Length: 295
Ligand SMILES: [Zn+2]
Image (cartoon, rainbow, N blue to C red):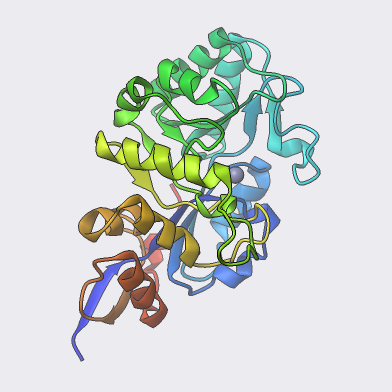
């Protein structure tokens, strides 16, 4: 039977410290981006990853002293770096680069202490100078707007706590937003019950973001609650609900050509349901030794 070979699934938002990462071995997920943990641990996992998986990482969450996620039961102290000044932001970015991080993670959560604008601007300027993108967790009133205004590259969740006005969505068109839509979908919600408001707001923001040319990318926040370790089919279904199909859907879920590849029978998947079926039928071709090298 004729086969088609495609890059494997890249999950752009995971927390390997909160799951049994060995379950990823030789699964359709061939690259994961750890978005917040003790940088020494993530660097070690990247050196000896599960078979067939490339691990990239950001190192710690950067936040205001006392800001999110400090004090959360799931967040070890070394996963959270408090930053109090532009100078400290510069040092924090240098430390991410030295630890081999691929990006700088910044947390803005309106329910807890917040980084002020001068520190936020310093993060963006220093990261840009270091050639690293800035990835922002934005939660609560006004925080997505601050991330967009300061020039952050990525929102690690589609905004779900508020409906963004059209002018803000338009300003965000140059960004990538990581989907994490399924975390709002409440496991075990009986069919027919109304969907959570957070999911509806996120879907609405995502549709309008895609309509202005924004890049929506698959990411699951694996480790946040009872998420599957592997392909999160619900996340792909919800990307389908946003309206992603064809090439755009494949680009959102699958990696660039250099990630370890998958193969399965033709045809090339065109819808979310096709892609889920294709991934179920796929097998990993396995990485070549060079694929496993981490920069
Ligand atoms: Zn997360």
